Image (cartoon, rainbow, N blue to C red; front, side, top):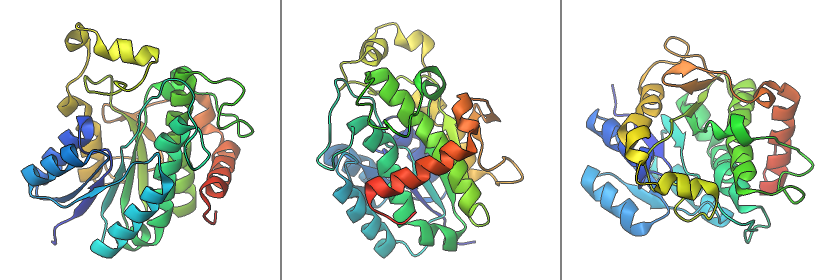
Length: 275
């Protein structure tokens, strides 16, 4: 059996880096994608792996990344959409989108959409890193996706993570014949997450006591690695949301099929691709 190609975004740190190390040790060719040139190159050198750079706050960089991946890899067996983050005060990107929504949802949506033909040809698995924040803070309004009326860092992040689950559901509905997809919550992981934010998340993640109640990046990466290495339809059900390798309920909006379809259509319009 030929070596699998696994693309992981947000792989230069945290659970992305931990998953990259485990999958590489298991024999996969891991493609490391990150925003920081120094961190991304360092991990790629450690694993003797190829790497690519992209900041999802700039959709032109996402488009360039998709072109690079299509040119470099005739087959993509796993795409792990792991890049994301929580912001502080409301920001609008050069593309005209609220930054949290773009980094957590629109960027991964665009990358997946631009790679869709390659993913279908490869009968790939697409894994979306979500969060319990989808349940705790998410409330998506298709008429206010950019949270112009009710912005808070927590709500924007919750909306982005809920969008990951809705995207998973709709990707499964539209392309489940050839692509297996899942979303998952890694747990509360002790990483550099939220360090650039001025939200409450920043203080929560910086407390000296975090080592007593947070998971290590290796523990947080476990479900991602399990989804990437096990067999869909046998070991797990595509289109579902997972935590600790088990299907879980999340925000009730995640089960709204009309909302999932509407978010897909709206997202396609926002990033300039055909639905």
